[in-house]
Image 1 (cartoon, rainbow, N blue to C red):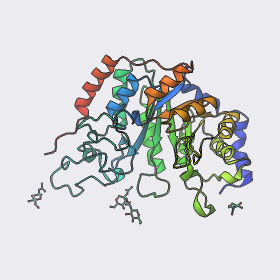
Image 2 (image 1 turned 180 degrees about the vertical axis):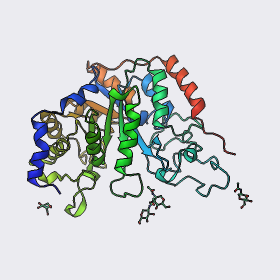
Image 3 (image 1 turned 30 degrees about the horizontal axis):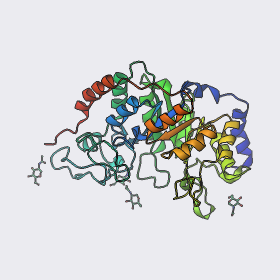
Length: 371
Ligand SMILES: *[C@@H]1O[C@H](CO)[C@@H](O)[C@H](O)[C@H]1NC(C)=O
Ligand SMILES: *[C@@H]1O[C@H](CO)[C@@H](O)[C@H](O)[C@H]1NC(C)=O
Ligand SMILES: *[C@@H]1O[C@H](CO)[C@@H](O)[C@H](O)[C@H]1NC(C)=O
Ligand SMILES: CC(=O)N[C@H]1CO[C@H](CO)[C@@H](O)[C@@H]1O
């Protein structure tokens, strides 16, 4: 809970314009921000090096990805809190008589990097993404490995990053703590040549508040959807760092914009759709991102970048509403739409160079054969 008074204290410095603007300068691009969600999950198996390679070749503006933190504190590029059988397969234990083996089904927070690195997470095509290229034997990468690949493929450091902390705010024993995430991710960010082009995003707004407290130069992006915005029984959502939407005036869209602003987020990143029906042409369709949400966030000086926009009918509507970026599993297709609308798009990275860099780094990223 947050009282009206402390809320005023929270909001005031932003209204006066002290911090807000500078961090955002870092991730402003002259190109419309087409973000490759998990590296472009529609085209390549998610979050593995080949996905990011193809996102560069396809001309994404920003690489969007997830981070988990392992038992031994390593930051890895992975979306789920555990190793799911639909995405990965075991190849063997990391060492003789490892009682944690098999690793499938185990939580990342309960496995070491050495254990994770035995897994093949490149072979399985997802049922809802039938166009995914698979890369047999490719393992989960650390964030450092991804940056190292990017340095090879993008020697001018043009690519932007949108990096998420995958903290479970509801089931807190499934992931490492917000503090562990923020400190280990920040450490890698600031030692990377990409340190000035990273946005930090999360559904768990506690990590965004903690990152701002640690380093206010890093722009933050507040993720939100129906499940994290409102709890049953009018409970305070564990996801929003104690902020309650009903503390703010206006419709739900305006309230969400105000809530993100209250934690000093630079960007609001809402789900595109609230209904199961996902196409705006159908009567049961309910949008999550609304025009009033976009306008409200813009009035407060934030950018708006909805996800995961995989329908061009929705992308068209969002472009009409003047969103500042679109996070999509199909960066190639959204880029084409943006270009048709005469908006500037990022150049495509040279395929030959990117694939050479990929091959070089894949040699290191192919699952180590167990003993
Ligand atoms: C592994 O377990 C087997 C059977 O229990 C045992 O014979 C062997 O010594 C163990 N090896 C190691 C390295 O602990
Ligand atoms: C988290 O705690 C719950 C309840 O105590 C328990 O059932 C569950 O197995 C725990 N999960 C993990 C990943 O340890
Ligand atoms: C929900 O809780 C808030 C604060 O705890 C309260 O102000 C509001 O009236 C409640 N709404 C309903 C519908 O119970
Ligand atoms: C995040 C985390 O460490 N989760 C669990 C790992 O496993 C132990 C025991 O097996 C649990 O107590 C932790 O909660």
